[in-house]
Image 1: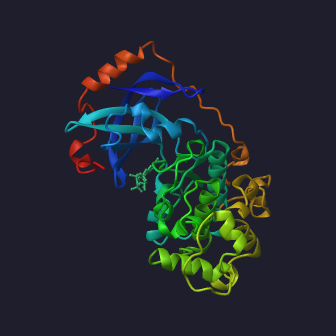
Image 2 (image 1 turned 120 degrees about the vertical axis):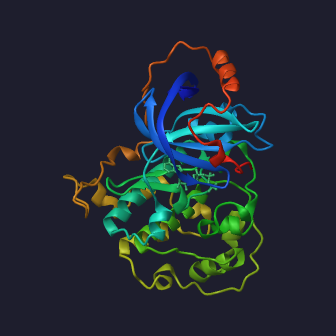
Image 3 (image 1 turned 180 degrees about the vertical axis):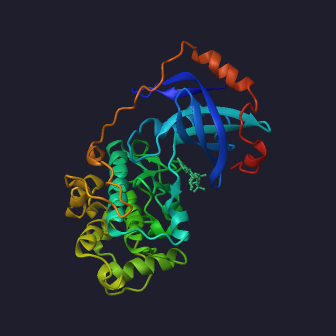
Length: 371
Ligand SMILES: Nc1ncnc2c1ncn2[C@@H]1O[C@H](COP(=O)(O)OP(=O)(O)OP(=O)(O)O)[C@@H](O)[C@H]1O
């Protein structure tokens, strides 16, 4: 048993006892290990547990104050790997923040590396879910800031998708600066960040999600730049050198690369895709972030009519398209899945501090992950 917290509908935390069955390592990032396995109490569900080592900046924070938890508390949507519970534990005198998250078994990047190809219907289903997730983020004034195939998890059999890893996500109200060119993994980084813009906007996620969607439809990376300059050159080769209006809108200096004629996305991709897919790509891949179609509008495109069709179409594996009709709603209620036990928060926090290394996870495996 582990003392942790659940999240109420209004975002408040409540103390709860957590119990897990066996876990196995199912993914790792630079600063975390992710385990998947069965949760036994207070709900029975397959979950992912992300263990993040606190760094010098976050060492003094309580787990409830950790940024990724703060952001995930504000979100709840079927296309997001939602935060269900959290707890902390200690190992080697370090605090480990543990996030209990919705789990799906297939990571998009791993499938791509294994040579899995998606048919057009599945690519539409996954793209729809990805954009419904970022529409939800935009409705909460949150930008993910690292949308890429490594952070997209799926269930290939049911056709469900969830956006994961909110470790870089930001809230727009904080008016923080992005740090420009080094935010968002290069292939998915929008032009304004490549040109040094320091403002966070939901349009950043629109560009990155469109690059991911292109991979679903075309089974290859859209802009595989070798470095920042090469990434800029590839983008300018397709869309042309930014106009004065674009530069003003982004609030950046003119990029120092050769001025090229725009080849257009169709020519660049050898006209390999259906016209309705190009209509989508052209509505979201705009140099000027203000001209990119917002996610909520993308969901209305004719490209996704097949998802709305009744009776629901069958996918190539014989299963029906998942019911995604309520995905366009921005408000999804957190189920109060758990009877709130009468435990007081102070006692739980004290018990947490005292329960060193009481988890079933191996501290050895988590070693070396300190930021
Ligand atoms: N909810 C989940 N369900 C299944 N697998 C997951 C889940 N969350 C994360 N993973 C897997 O674990 C990996 C690492 O998780 P995550 O990206 O959240 O860690 P990170 O330390 O923030 O990564 P990065 O180094 O990219 O910042 C993911 O690429 C994915 O394969």
